[in-house]
Image (cartoon, rainbow, N blue to C red; front, top):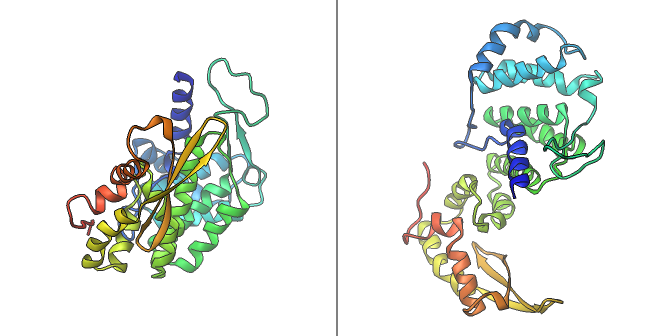
Length: 292
């Protein structure tokens, strides 16, 4: 348990700047630190040069610092140069092995390891900048590059799930910007039933745009009444798999080993749904509240 906890901290530390979710319709959270001001003070002249293998790391860090301090124009200029660069440093996928004490992993993806790609990071930052500028046509180009061409891997569920959630949220913001609300719902609604999903602001905004208050209130009861389950056998015994229809979409509620519950499967899945963040944020008090 201690080993996994340390690995999780390492991965989350590495991806800190990756997972800034939408603060509102047009802005992302930043986490500016003193080191960003120091980087800008000491290295701001780099913006006038091309990145090289020698200055590439500092060049990327300076672009990050401009992003964190909301200097989007300079950050965009530098991230574009990184994405377009032909230097070796920016055209390789770098493997970071797990550095947990006692690990002996050598040059292979072991638990806790991950890959890093400067162009992946630059493309994600450019996506965010262009979404903030409402330049969705070019934002989707960089998001597609990050997702398909400059792929990275996390050999740890925490890192991989967080990365995919970020990519999904950026796609959702792109669809929202184009008023393609149904695509946002299709993309984000399934994960909204995960108990610890904390990134529903985009979805909640879109649900408000798509359904009237009366429709949302009616769906509170109809969703619960729609809950059903089927059973299947495994070597260990019988399981039940739950389903629900919510906001006109049929979703899986998960599975449960029947020997582990002392209530009916239907009641188990009703409880599971009522403990979801979607239910607690949208239906718990009989009305829907949203951030304005």
